[in-house]
Length: 596
Image 1 (cartoon, rainbow, N blue to C red):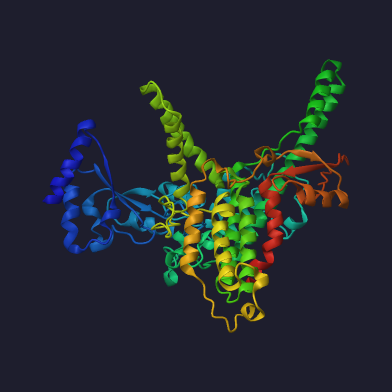
Image 2 (cartoon, helix red, strand yellow):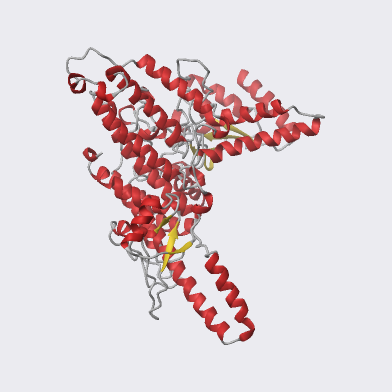
């Protein structure tokens, strides 16, 4: 009766505003209820008109509540079969598509329940797009998908806006072609020679990363939803802070990364063929009509000074970075364990430098897409502050500059703290915040700055404790780890991390620690003329911006039946050029952990 009265009191103001108001209730709070507590749930259901109390049955991918207590089904109240899937907005790739293709339909087929549809309630969005695409598709499925491979093909075509005239899989060729710079050739602009490559990438991911047919990966206390990985994990953090073990074959994710990059090269090459063919047709038309000659000349002049940009799907750029991030994260975990398991100063230093190196490389890749830049997150937060400031000016005659700065800093501090320390790190504190890293994210500007700084804290502390801060001062016995009475000072180490955390989260305006030293203009795909000579290639490797690359550092010959070749090389998005370099650098580590 108490629950009934409380629910009626809560629903009354909703009904006053809208007589047909629907109360959507998070069933999460009832998880763990016993049989004796069922009257409490029933009181809520009966306090609201039938059909107007809807339960969001959260975390059904782990344990479905509706079927407990002999399929009590929330006492016939409509409920939404939903997944939680993500805690804290973490950015790893996970989620079982086979599970989504089976469990909701069990609820649909049970005639004794009142399921109203499917939904999702993650703690953070902007991660795992195919998972949420599939759970949304389920609402329009009469039965489980009988051909998941075809679903993945359709997903790739829809996500990138590409069509395949032949409708079949043309095959992807050798994965290592992506390293050599090979591309598909000879296809018309109306078809999409890249699509089979991209489809193959997603089929690989569907059968590996997204193919584990179980609720979630919680073997031996690990939880994939809270994976830290070596890119972001705090050394000696313990418990939930430890990196996630690999629950799929990492070489599969590497192959998918290669396919996405190779498909990207195919898109750019095919677009250039189409552009040059269109340009020749336009040139032939203008030469036959003096009226258009000056216009053609102007267009040509404009093109040479400001080359046309190829149309590159932003979703593909995101996916290249995301899959690459996933591979590098798993590789970094191997390096992390090499470092934390090392028992001598020289071993800690050498393995630690490898971890610092991959954190820097991953940061460079992450910075090549706006969806993975912490600067975008912080900018949105400070923009919200500016809105409040403007609203305040409308109500007050004046606002002091110090108050305006305080508001902006408040929003920026929270934006910096949420994905790192969670709650603001206090100045002078020698301890870390309560749930540090709960919302950790693989973002450019975070991995290469904040998290990399914490790794350095560990290495520096170890070298100070065993070598006085200088590797050269270590005695041979110390380096070998024999006969030394020194020990790692964890208290001092945590103090270092706390001080660093305060400095970084309070670096307003990124005055001390840059967040992605990145040129947005260079990120956009364009065309550039360059010689294919070895000397020029080496010059590009040495001097070219890491945010802008030529395919393979070389000219791509776009020959056609006319034999035309204008020695044009295609510049590609930073994500593609960076990925090619990192694939080459870390492939051996993927295949053999000892190479890490």
